[in-house]
Image (tube, rainbow, N blue to C red; front, side, top):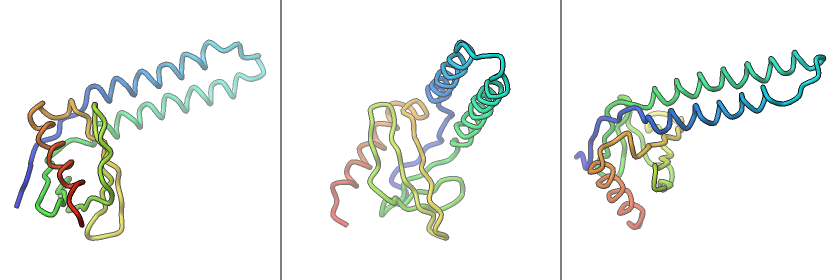
Length: 137
């Protein structure tokens, strides 16, 4: 039985946060007074920041789609069944779910930002997961 279901959207706040952090790192690298002999290191560091920014944006984009909280607090996401490996970490702007695949031993962390859901859906999901935390297992 489905306790809660929604279509997760891409979090604009997470995308902007990622761009801001990577932009600050790139700015620091560019503004530091590098000797001319350190040019290869400077270019390497700047390239790593840019590639990590692209990787971060792709990971944020991949976290959308149909998400359902089932009875016994199992999760159906991306066509697979997951169990909650630990109690969710709740923050005002999001929550971190640690998921374990039921078919294998694979684990995944899923950050759900509050702006990837409507305000009502966010409130309902938080309430259900907080209730799950209180239940003895």
